[in-house]
Every structure is written in structure tokens, then in C-alpha cells.
Length: 274
Image 1 (cartoon, rainbow, N blue to C red):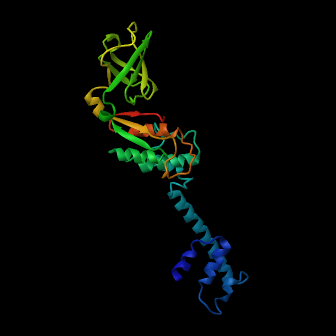
Image 2 (cartoon, rainbow, N blue to C red):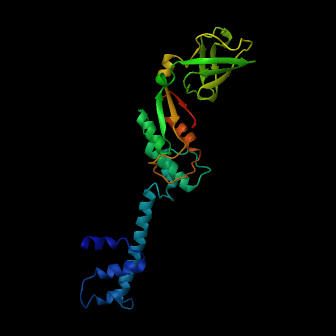
Image 3 (cartoon, one colour):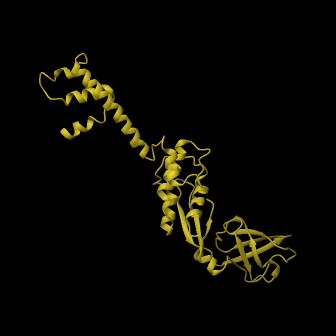
């Protein structure tokens, strides 16, 4: 009980409570009775000490709050400086203090390097995103094209399984009997099994042959990571209250962070939420 009572001296509700707590800790007896009377010298001394104790306590609380990244206000700029903000991902010029605290917390907690798929999944969870992480060598195995047609210079390919491509990905088209279709092209995704690309044109439609797709060389695929968000909904163990407005959207910020963290010899493909 004594320990709990002593602790309350340093955490009063207000200055009056501070004076009463301090007076109660004075020795018992007639000599000390005036400590409760503000008209007596001893009471005035207790009041003066209580004022200083309360003021010092507020200062200590402010200091502790500033040491907490979730509460800091006056030291927010120092927190950002220690985390290396602003940078290419985190911009502080157009955000509120709360958003700045979130950005600093995210970078402080998560910029520890990415080594495994679990590291990427953990980082994504801090933004409320559930993602699947795939090795390029597995994700971009050859796809079989069941239909390849064209109108003018636009070719449309339909794969027997989900292709997993994103807009702008350079994909190889192989083994069409009409060689005009073959080559490496930047694709535009229509749906999970269909994509289009622009080629020279003037080819027979539909194309024939055992047509397949490829993405890059074996070396490129081995050094490619595919991040595929599985849902736009917030993860169950998202640590922060939603909605939170980041300086950029959560998925774009996550992508920017991953590009900063992954090794230089690794390509990152970030699929949009479907």
C-alpha cells in the first residue's frame, strides 16, 4: 500500500490533489497539523512545494509523451529526422501531425530489411493489407495460349490458366505458326485469362500452333518477386484504427517501401488488388 501511495505523489489529477497528497505524507502530530491550512506558514510551504512538484510532474509527462512516437508533438521533427523522413516514400509537406506520426512509426518499425516472404507479409499487415508473395520462377512459368486472334495491330491472347500478368509487363509469345505474332511485347490485361498486345499486324486470325508465353529468362525469373494483394479489406490484426489517410495510398506506399528495401538485383512486380 505504501508503494502505491508514494507513486500517487507523482501523478496527481490537479494541483490541489498534489497539495493534499503531499500533506498526507507529512509526519503525524500537532506540529504538522497546519500543513492542511493554507493560512499557516507550514500550509503555505506545502502549497508552494506542491505547485513546483505539480509543474515538474507535468514537465516529466510532456517529456515522456515526446519520447513516445504515438504522442509526440514538439519532437515530431526530430523523430522524422532520426527515421530519415522525408524521403522518396514519405513526404511530410502536405500531411497532418497524426499522419506524420504514423509515417514515422511505420518507417521506424519496418525499415529493417527484407529477407523472406514472411517479412513482406508482416510489413503489408501494418498497412492493413493481406498479400501473397510469389517467387518469379514459380509464378511466371510458361502459360499455354488457347486462343490468339488479331484485329489490325492488336492481338488478343487467351490462356488456359490465369496468366498473372500486369499492364506493361514484357511477355514473350512463342510458337505461333504465323510468326508475326511471335516476339516480346508489353501486354495490357483484360481479365485473369486474357491480355492484348500491339504487334506489326497483317497476320492470319486466329493464329495456329502450340502457342505459349514466357516472362524473361530463367535468371530474370529467379530474381523477381511478385506481390499479390488478396483483398482490399483490412486485415484482422491491423494495428491502427481505420480509415487512416497516408501521404499516399496504402498500396502505393507499401510498394514504394518495398522498392527501397529489396536487394538491388531483384525486380518487384506489385499486382493491383482485383
